Amino acid sequence: MNGYEEQKRIRVVLMRGGTSRALFVMRNELPSDPETRDRVILRMYGSPDVRQIDGLGGADPLTSKLAIIGPPTRPDVDVDYTFGQVSITAPLVDYAGNCGNISAAVGPYAIDEGLVDAVEPVTTVRIHQTNTRCLLVAQVPVRNGRAAVEGEYAIDGVPGTGARIVLDFADTAGAVTGRLLPTGRPSDRLDVPGVGPVEVSIVDAGTPCVFVRAKDMGLTGTETPAEIEADRALNERIERVRGTAAAHIGIVDHWQEAAQKSPYLPFLAMVSPPADYMAFTTGQTVQAERVDLVSRLLFMLRMHKAYPVTGTVCTGAAAKIPGTIVYEVVCPESRERSLLRIGHPAGVIEIEAAVELQAEAPKLVRASLGRTARRLMEGYAFVPWSTYAKT
Image 1 (cartoon, rainbow, N blue to C red):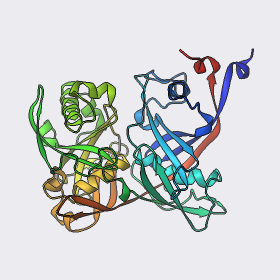
Image 2 (image 1 turned 45 degrees about the vertical axis):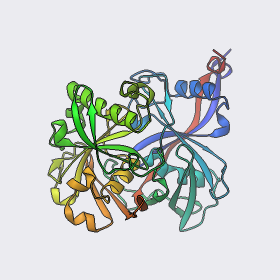
Image 3 (image 1 turned 135 degrees about the vertical axis):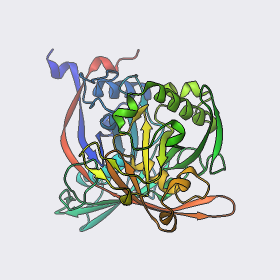
């Protein structure tokens, strides 16, 4: 038997969405049985292995992502989109939440694959985000019947410029927990084992996030990802806080389970007031006046080298709710306008956010931002037939 006979071909498209990268695959290309499907996905990526040398993963959480696309299962949408975060170190595909950066590539993929009719100059793509059961709306520039690539829009963390895709995440409040404020309060004091009492704000918009003051974790807030990841004691404290928050809102039963059972959610962000810092990707100084707060965010037990879009949505919402830690640290002028500028390790990300402070609970009414995306490669992934065998 040759290589083609011993392996199954799976058609994939490699897409960059924002500051992340993912394999895009149609739902009917994968097994319907969940266990077999995940074995196939792990083999495609070469997981678990820190280099993912025997697969197509990029050996980094930002490049070990998956988008499964299918026909709509709701009458009010154009496509279904399921996100998977493929673990590098464990045999796990985490479907607990969404990646907003990869969401930016769903519209262009759907247009170029003929799943949505191309309308110039802008095509609206209504996306059913199946992980969170939310609606995402993408405004995708189109030229000559294809998703536009070239443009003048730049995002920090990605070289060059591209066509600006506008994403609306207003429907994602309570995406995982069912409430914008999962505990019903803008802040909580948690008794964290081995750490002590820590004040946090837990917000669920786009994805659940736990916000803490950087200074409460012993940081200035302007550290680089490498500096934070090098401090093992700090990372242990961070995971204890994240795990305790995860248990507090019912994602796991005990804080110790979070690392294995829910490494993707919730995110944890360490926030601080505006300050000068160096963007580690360019070596250029980001001036304090360019940002409304500075944040360092962790997911999959790793520092994000830029800032996730779903985390941006959550930070934008938190910044508009009095009493949250984010509201406390932001530049006061930003509380009165919709635009929020978040300083992250690679630069700045902006979001237009608005929250109505209703008597019963705050309501997210606006959450939109711009991204770019590009098709990088299309072809076939090869998976040995033995992977499909029942174990």
